Length: 254
Image 1 (spheres, rainbow, N blue to C red):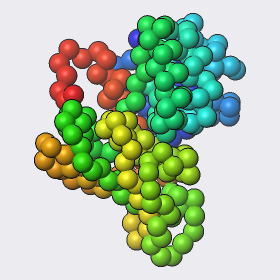
Image 2 (cartoon, rainbow, N blue to C red):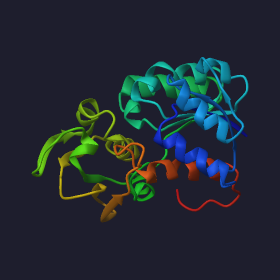
Image 3 (tube, rainbow, N blue to C red):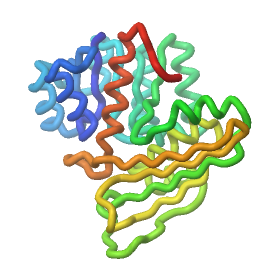
Image 4 (tube, rainbow, N blue to C red):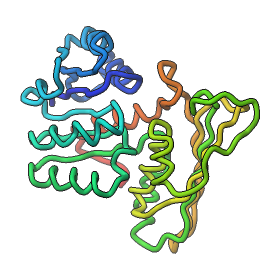
């Protein structure tokens, strides 16, 4: 399977490094980024090709990894799906808008391709998907990050947001993909609290789910990407695991 990458930032760098080490079960061949230098740097590592326009890769790949921005999900992913190519969406916040998600799901169905949203920077997603088959009473997510990861400067713990996931994604589109992922997995709005905490050096997500199945709590303490502190290494790993699972005959988890 040949794969193209849209957006050559931190996540694309980690995926490409795995390809260089022979740990990727697909072939990464095409790269697009508005910053040509970033795209050329990654392409040179895997003997890949840089395209001047994203559309130029679509006749040569089976799948595209979107790792650019929520805006790219809205503006560029439809073009990919219309060509019948599968898409892995890393900017999951771009899918939380019902109108956008419905449009993309319809395009995928009509063009016989698939739209994937990896688990990203949180654990417990398999459990919450299974639990959502019953009745869910409460889902809460507390995201705690160093101020720099949230683009602010403060010396004391500060609550930046408390409310529903859909609004959180609008206010923090580059920082709270986890809220969108959990909301879509459970099929309902979840309660979100975002905290800037100068006493932590990791991106942390505390998830609590209560339903007729019982209840569970998870804490994910993520190492941040050196290239972009807003991005957690686990988010890139989730995409890599998804790519590798496409060629596996034995799958564990829902």
